[in-house]
Length: 613
Image 1 (cartoon, rainbow, N blue to C red):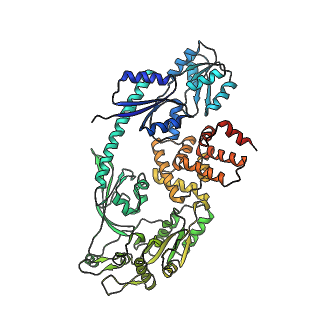
Image 2 (cartoon, helix red, strand yellow):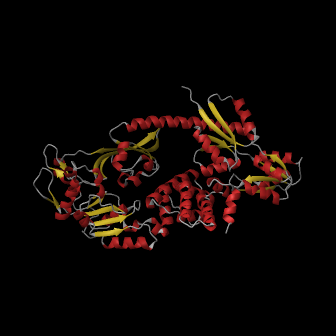
Image 3 (spheres, rainbow, N blue to C red):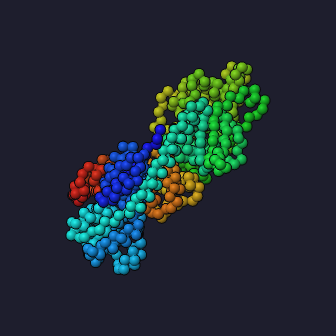
């Protein structure tokens, strides 16, 4: 079957017609084109139309290209109007006037106006605009008699009784851009087809499979691995494998086969390096449930791998609320009493549990994370206590963890059989394996992770009281705003593997501190990972690019919704309305024209509502 491709050309009057003729001459029967005239203000609507119609590859130049890069992560081939094109337009302008100026969109690639002036033989002016409404005022206030730019310039030049010359990319530039865009479309389609085939093969297996690139970032994870790691593919892809599960971090000295305790289950793991024509491209990790017999475990000590756990000195904090929680945690680190760590979802309460273990006298003993919701009522005894049946012997997790720490999560979703096993273990510090009679003494510290508000459900009140003998309350991010920037910096550094500081990017910092982070540290972690991946692609950091990257990483829609929610909580006066508009502009990177469009009103109405004080 012959492949077909779809490319959208974002132009303006004159350029679009030239592109239409070039496309007809190129006779690309396998490529469908959508040609649209648009400006930066109308680009979002055109982009939505094209995406809905199935277009994934775009061509645009000047202001459209710059605006596209701000609002979308899809592929766009730049159609650049070069200095030669501008010089040609300047030569044409001599027939219309003697004081020419080039008009540029603020975020497009800059031009060297000094060199153009030198080549032209006299001074050339420069007008830079951000909104088309602003352009009208700039033209009226200037003394230039000939304006050079796009179709937008022509319409405003006519209104201001000025002459105009359109600056076009030449036919050669258009042909080159179309060819590169078509090649990119072919490559992307091929990659998509291979990805679908690979995913189908990987998903149709009963073992967990994780594929990560050479830097350790997950590129594919199948359903079985999602189940073992308790994470969905959307949250896993693009993150470091070490972030999803610390003891699966790729190591140069790792054995080809090893054992790991993951979410309370002992897994047999393999990890191999992937090579293509001798070039290292990533890691292939597999996960299988270990079915070792009890006799093997009894007669030969099975070494449990130690979790690479956090220590108190690893915790990032500059806030008083977080320091208070850490100080109390340090005080009870060596206590043997059960401890509960309570806080909102996403506050990474697990890190406190790791610190309580890794800085205690139990640090050399096992640390087992146990998700109680995954243990069925029928399997509770065998899973937790073990089994002495000679036909199917099994070592229970509590015995495996003896001398160390067991971290319990999802207590409120556990069944009565699980709670009964835990109640005996916590109360009497001993267990009897299923089908056996010999008691096994336990020396375990139990740490329980609880989300607030605590839903008691069918939790045994006696067990709950014992597990909450000591309580650490982890504050939400909104109560520790001083920590947001250093936390974001740390997560970026984990992603890009080098230092990164936000101190000189004031606008980006303002966005981070204003946003509410309702997902707490988990949301910061995800946003910082997206920021880091984008930074690695650009390999440069200017105030404007970092500011836009922060907005994209959080999500413009989320920022807009927060601004609207803030407004809805007020008395909705003109001052409150102005505050909402300013928040959308300052923190979502919107222009007032875009705010007006979002609020479904004209810019005149927007300005009038803001000025009604």
